[in-house]
Length: 96
Image (cartoon, rainbow, N blue to C red; front, side, top):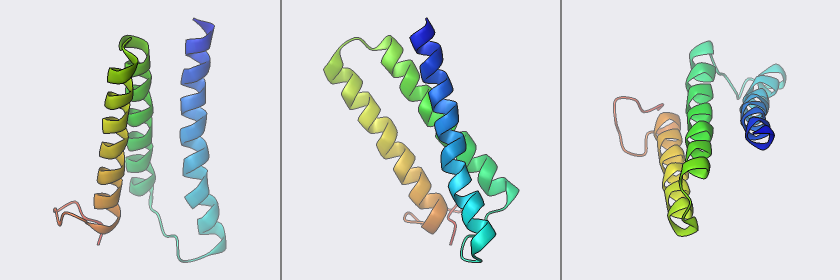
């Protein structure tokens, strides 16, 4: 039980650390210009991905299935991130 709680705390701290990167960069350059909505969307995306990965780690016992599902989750994260950032698919949600 304690290990699972540590992993959850680790997920939350990792999300906070990743979100601190653009926040700190905004203090030093105008090249990074995130608004509150950007931080909320990325926080939800990262936290959701982390929690979904944690769920898979807890529930899926077969290592091959676990690796496959985690790979699909991470691919989905990167595709959504790329679409929101630069619009690789040209959806209405594209960032450019």
